Image 1 (cartoon, helix red, strand yellow):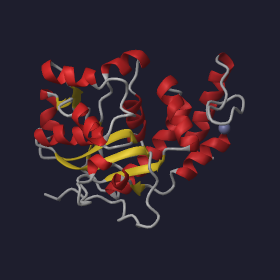
Image 2 (image 1 turned 30 degrees about the horizontal axis):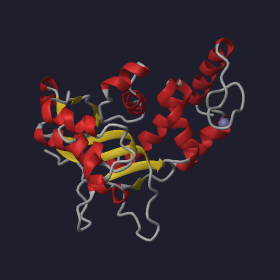
Image 3 (image 1 turned 30 degrees about the vertical axis):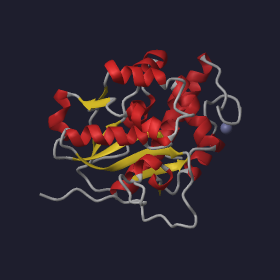
Length: 263
Ligand SMILES: [Zn+2]
């Protein structure tokens, strides 16, 4: 057992004295994520894959890739259960396991090259107020501990909808699940911007967008638009999980993204 795992385990045991916790995946007692489910998550995330092919907003009609995305795992089983629970409760032990998976996907995307800037997708204000934390930011902060040579810049902000946009958004309220590709892209378009003070940290730099789950890709597409507008060189995105598994008939073109140019 590695030292970090031992320390995390010891911390979990101390916490268990005060707060009874069971494994969020299988219900085993005394730990928010039992050793068996910890190794299941590790196994499910062992081969990061290119996932943009399953995200209609990131491909054009001719099938050309608009933005490459690397996913650590498919959104199912222990990964889905673990992430759902982490988004609700932010369990430290669970976060550590998911962050390791996310870090693995970043390493696959960057091929361990230095110089990339990781930019988390902003949480909606309502979600932040409800939870008191942003799951993506928290996971990325933990993942960064495994990733020497990359910088994390919290550059993206949510834009408050106004005028016609607000009307359009409220007209489409009721969640994004039922929305088609066009409606969903419409809904998020113009919903993010790069904060003025963050511009120098991303302008001209190779950036990778980070989010928790990839579905249609509309959110990541909007993040890319806002970063482009601020002069960033968006190389792609990394997510913890993609809702669509990789296409077995179409072998992944390799997870690696274009490395930063050496000066
Ligand atoms: Zn378990």
